[in-house]
Length: 618
Image (cartoon, rainbow, N blue to C red):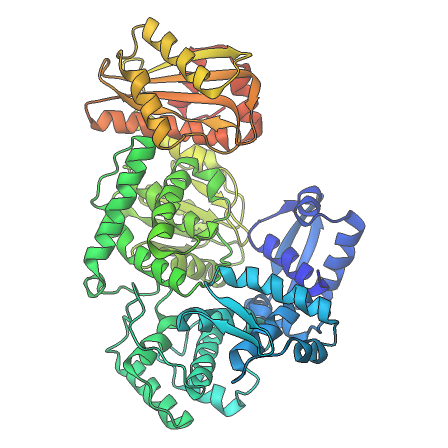
């Protein structure tokens, strides 16, 4: 791996963690402490007066001084100064030649141009083929002819922008070209990232049109929401005059995509394909119900989610790399909402034929968290952003949050003095760059640097539990030790039999469990399984926790805890509330090794019920 690639690995990790221990960072990068220190020292030199990586209390953190300049670095400024010792840059160059050449590309020519052996360039080509599989593109080699790139026009342009233009700036674009693009942009006050993406989109479009490659149909599931915007029409007209080209309707629609990927302003969602969107949403809810037995009401979640969902679909279509400085911790803080978002992402991936980045799953998790938190009425979805350096920095943090959550969530910048004097109950949460005594607040408080931090999820669910306390009439918990059991099916049989013997499940419950497992095994990561089925015997939820000693390990899976749920067959609002709290408990335990160990060792069902009631989650 070339040095610049390693520097970006370090930078990417630090962007999504408020702080990370030396050991964790070394393990993530698989490098020694001495090597890591040298690389961070070099990175700090490259980012002088822009940002710095500091080590405090054996933890690394990223401190940004100049956000605009840092965004340029994050967008690949360091990569463009590298040479062909970088494998990734050689791959970018190969793709560049494949896209820009009018004739097949010869391997010997590539090897000569980047000054490596034929064997090395062949390895680079094979690695590039793997990278391009994500874009549904193929590099086809024909003897005595050369290499050619095959694929859909959208995927070719997307790969060119994301891969080639990360290492090679728009080399044939003159300064006057860039000035025309930015001067006439329909949203001149937009972020550096969007400006950079717009320049790349125009550059790539002009290049492909001059080569004779055009869009000949609409891009599926994409809509241009600024199509009738007079400023956008003027922007297109200025490009046509400057580049002496005439753009088709399809090209104009494509050129608008940088303005249609982030949640910056309210849009008329009825302009989008509502049938497809609603069908997609219903598929998500059905899949969540199938996997978890949870019934999430369609309204008002669909109204809250549809705008975010449209922009998410757009980002997936154009494969926009997400690197926002928030939300990486959501998986730990909202275990149930994150799991629900993962299930939704599965449907999205299946429908759109795209991999869903974890950061996008995190965004979805926030909306599901709001839906599950009934105490948050739509008119109260306000977040206070508190900054110790004043309202200016608070505005920067606020803008990043607004970009993620969109205009339906109201963000209010405040000083420490403001927050101490106001009634914070009107807020959904408080994000603060300085420590606040959480005992003084009845809402979640998150301490942040440029990232979310501290214990959000526990406070929120503790508050929710006060309004909807569980009782023994709603939930029964049974602990079932499983010693030396040889296979997973036997574990389920033993657990079902014990529940039946205690009069907690219907006779056909075991049959339902095995039917469900045959359709889709419910073994999750981290040694946790969660078989569940409807139970028409009792009008209460039953949770049986199977404790395997030792863990059951096969080549396909490893299981040490089995959470078997018997869900009342009659759908009731109370049942759903119970399931929310139980699932929150399960996924919180699944995500933490020490919590799983405590569950394996506990012997008290009463204590477990108390833990779930209070939202302590071990």
